[in-house]
Amino acid sequence: MLFADDIVLIDESREGVNIKLERWRDTLEAKGFRLSKSKTEYLHCRFSAEKGGVASKVVIEGAIIPMVERFRYLGSIIQGNREIDEDINHRIMVGCKNEECVRGFVR
Image 1 (cartoon, rainbow, N blue to C red):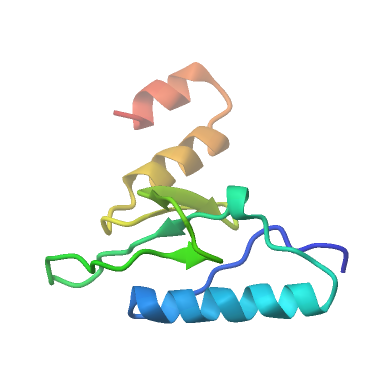
Image 2: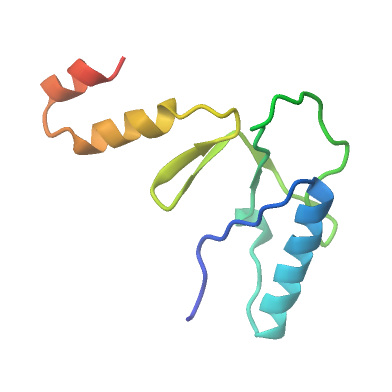
């Protein structure tokens, strides 16, 4: 394998994500690879009813990783707000072959 394009690290806390991210970076570097800080981002999924945030940041070697509200992973659009509208609309658009189909499904 020459490179890994996409990977997902999951944890219940940002501290846990930071630990896993550093472990992943260390493992890659030990094998002669490097993790691209400029292409790395994270999504905070709010799947529980709990509100409130965590003060810590996600970092790699002291560099703060930007948070996004959505991203595409393995063809699906993952949204941090528990919604699936963007993914459904994207799949409809991909499946539609003509404008009439698109107008009939996408609101």
